[in-house]
Length: 77
Picture (tube, rainbow, N blue to C red):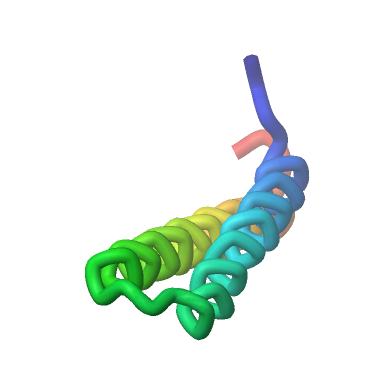
């Protein structure tokens, strides 16, 4: 299965938004948790999804960079 660079940028953006949604939900839910262990686990959950969002941004930027460089190169070599 081949994925174009443009589609990869779009998919990375969607993945990033999805992950940031979970991260924000995790950070917001910290106010309602009274147990220290559960709060620690929720914080780890939120930071994990933040990390995944960063990975999505990284792959989106790399895909965009590849797409931009491919447009600059002349066809045929």
